[in-house]
Image 1: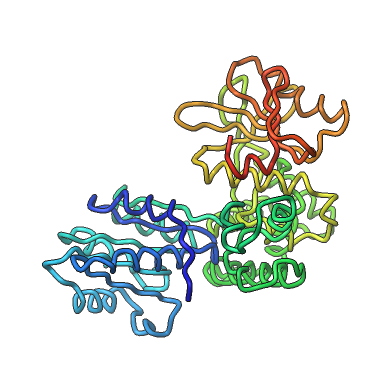
Image 2: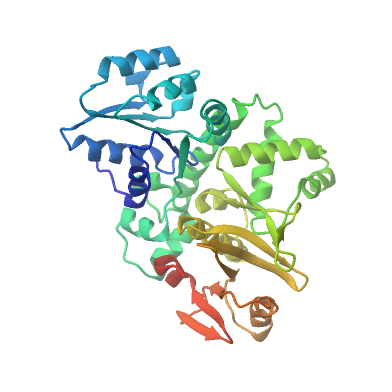
Length: 401
């Protein structure tokens, strides 16, 4: 089996070796955490000075490791004192009270631990309770556009971008025909169902399963729109499906903990503070988002573009909020290395009205931080309009800002 490398994540992991820090690979199911861990296993095993102990709880080979005591016994039998030991455990939440074992092995000399999990609540609550701040999270995302091209061996261009916009970045699609929409969406739905069942329904003993699925569809249709627990509850009441605000908020948290969606708060640009309502939600994978809506793609393309831009910004190391001005919303307020930038996402800047809407909001911001409009307008690569850069989506996904 060929393992396609994602070196940026391997570099992040290796940076924390030797610091008595547990390294936790997090992210939605099927975004490639297991393959990153296997890549790390192969890389470390190449040195005779290393002893690599690898466990994958999704494989029957390790079915006997059920509790932390089983885990301790397994590791003790394979630990080599005179070598650098690397303990790599995939889907560690399948081991009961795993945190007790992890706490012990973290303090062993010449030992580094890398673990993966698909639920933020399980990992953060269990590890932080016992370990304080002695763990570091490496967030594994779905494929970027450049990775998508590499995985599927495509020629970079409009056709590749169209496939990426439609299919999303689940690495497992490499086994499917990405030009077959039915295959792509069937696989995306399988991944979503697995995440919903294993990381939410079974874990939290969910009773109102139909509402959970309706909520996912609502968020897919509302991508890029400010929503709140109140607005969702009111909408459902109008659909003769009354659900309390408290239940809405609880289920939203479950979806975020399972990395299916990410909540992005609004930022008051003039007041320079976070606002407490009307957050936006973006899907971890755009293909899963597309598979949840019945809308024809050209009718919701701006939502899709915005979702893609958000995750590329996160991949590139930006902290991202949604901007709020009296003159209108700014899609993204991004900060990296104490440097702020503003971004508007658009499909086509084809007339003066659209140009005024997208560029006018940015022009209303009085500070001197860089400002960008990212769109799929034909022939645009990178233009400057009164200090605002107009950047093509392809150019941004290839080369960043």
